[in-house]
Length: 299
Image 1 (cartoon, helix red, strand yellow):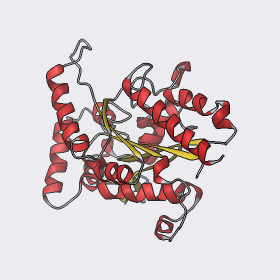
Image 2: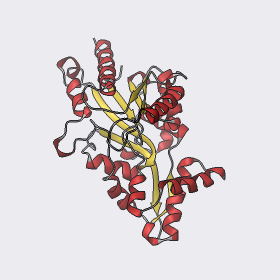
Image 3: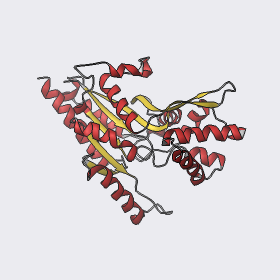
Image 4: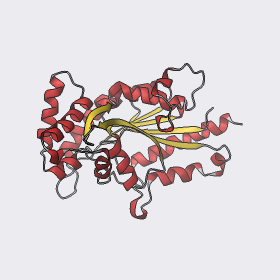
């Protein structure tokens, strides 16, 4: 049995409480509903969600230079993206990733060289996600980020869609993780189609976390092949920081119907990774359970 455990996350609403593009909207003074409404027009004309919002970002920059972006600017904007409680290591904070590392450093697991690899598969923008991980001092924990990407035109501004990551593409990326295909290390993505009789990371060693419809194929793939899938939902807050129970219940019920009721995920938990919270306990429990299976198989 492989000695690698893969912890795979979506990003928006799974690791971050807001859609990452909100940082751009706040900087520009653009209304989010207006922007997403414009994307909806593209979707009605046959675009998928990821292509629609990337086209809209490019169109904004072409119409007015103050909205024109570079990938370096996206990276910088990403540094302003917040993460849920319990994730950030910024300013000396202790993160769930530190606790997971400590768990696998226990003698019973360390002697089998059990490794934890973290991945992000998102319909968001790769430079912004990388900027967020850098700002929160998580780069050392994430082996690879699979997300949407854009290229710059002759003027040096974003002008082309390079790659999109949507519903079913997320499953392709999971197979890339399973087979050890790493674009970051120079592997061509087409290598995912090579026949293999042994996965570098078998599905039973995977844990996938997501929050919405774009994660459904990934939930199903991991869950049906022996891995663990956890659906998360955002606790909606009032202006004073208290939980808005009515809005949170709606979010919870939507998540339950999409993930748990449909047998796509084992659990639906609030997206809070801090000490003593159910999500942190679930992740520690799943990682320990998989690690014990690996240790037993090595005897």
